[in-house]
Amino acid sequence: MELIKDKCFGGERPLFGLHDVRMENIEVKDGESAIKCCRNLECDDSRFYGKYPWWHVDGSLITRCYFAPESRSAIWYSNDMTMRDCVIDAPKFFREMRNLTLENVRFTDADETFWRVDGLRLRQVELKGGTYPFMFCTNVYVDGLVSDSKYVFQYCKHVEVHNARITTKDSFWECDDVTVYDSVLDGEYLAWHSRNVRLVRCHISGEQPLCYLDGITLEDCTFDAACDRAFEDSVRIDATIRGEITEIKNPVSGHIVADSIGRVTYDEFAKGHDCVIETRN
Image (spheres, rainbow, N blue to C red):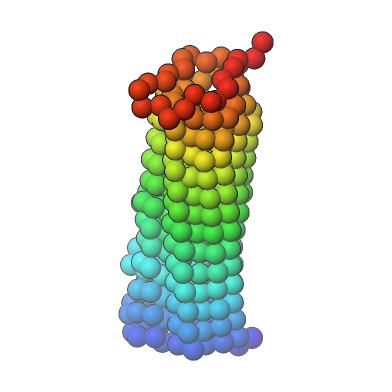
């Protein structure tokens, strides 16, 4: 590979059309679209300040790099990318991509990040702030995620999450085929209007979780005391709950078993009474 090292770039498209190049200790100070329409790139220990610095790149490895707030919308339309040990202070990262892997990456403004990514793998990633990360993503695998962004995982398909701590509002909405293991899910209105959701050894907090679902499986999950009106209008429920659940409201069909149930409510808006609800002996 050709090596570009210890250089500073600015202006319009200074590194357009590169291929088979390794960059070390470079700096993109200003301008737009510094690295565009490229393939087979490596970049290490570098800093990006200009707008849209990495678009339409196929095959890239980015390590130990920093993306400043000015580099918003930095990486779009780029396939087969791995990023490790980076800090991102800019919003609207990673859109319209295939096969993206991140390891040990920290976002300080995760607003509208990860949109329409197919084949997303995250390991030890932290998201701070912002709204709507992971919109319209497919084939997602996560192991180690800490996030306080709002409205995470909406309109996603084929998602597997391990060891996450997600503090949010409205997560996993309108999703298909989601499995979450050994995670803390804290926020209102968890997984509304989704299909085929499975939660294994998770702790659930917040109001009105798991409503309007078609196919929800819980295995050895626990609920915070504030979780009221759970399972409303949900069908095909198969839930095993450890400890107490405060309130179950208007479930339509399936089976719920818990150590203790505060109350079961059916009101005049209930769509059915075919759900078996019981406590352990």
